[in-house]
Amino acid sequence: MSTSTQVRPSRPIGGFRGGLLGFSAGFVAASLGSYFYLIDDYRKSNESIATTVASVSKESVELGKKFSRIDALEDDFDSLKSSIKDEIDLKSQRTQSEVQQLQSEVSDLRTYIVSLEQDISRYFASNRDQYIRI
Figure 1 (cartoon, rainbow, N blue to C red):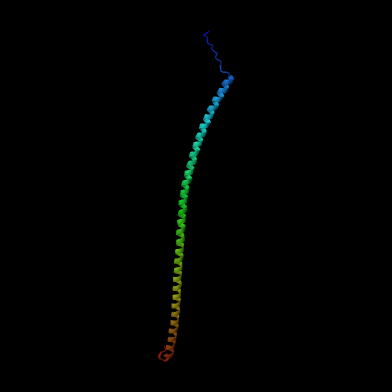
Figure 2 (cartoon, one colour; figure 1 turned 120 degrees about the vertical axis):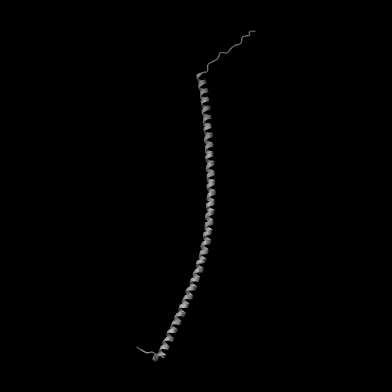
């Protein structure tokens, strides 16, 4: 038996195999870079969307508060409007009654003045001789 081992001669990597290995290594590196870029971009866009959603939520709460304030002001306005209308009606009625009372008093005064004029005329007519004319 012979104890000699056969050593295989090492073959240099061929151009085709080297090109294929380089292409694969470059493809993997580019894919990993693109993957990490996309993951980072996805994370940033999610943060942006979360911030926007939080902002919209905050604004909608503030808008709801403003609408409730507007509703409260409208209710106050309606109550003021009705109370002012009632007050104006009451003052109008008072004014009308005062005007009617004044008209009645003026009419009574006219009647009294006419009565006085008639009494004065009768008095002077009956006592015409008692006056001395100059």
